[in-house]
Length: 107
Image (cartoon, rainbow, N blue to C red):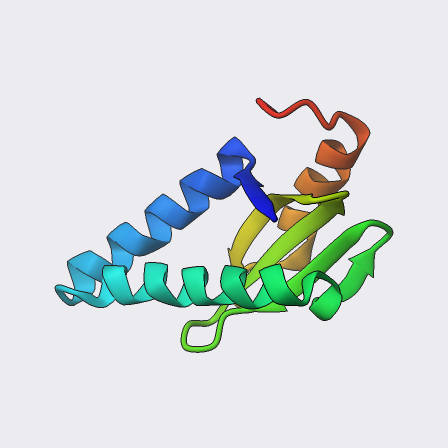
């Protein structure tokens, strides 16, 4: 499966990894490793995440309080958001719904 990150999701990953790395050297790399492990699991079982909106699935990282929101298309998957548990769901839902309405990759 080929994973593509929407620009806001890529920015969320970069921000979270930077935050953790600044808090404790090496922790940002562990965050990225946890995210990579989740993507490998989803490669094997893409429908493992629970459907939270039509066409949008949620899967949780194992060691960090983050959820990954993604959509599936044939052999491809789009990462729509990577969100800390503390963020209000309205924030990611509005963006994800907008992404579903305009699926162009640079959105």
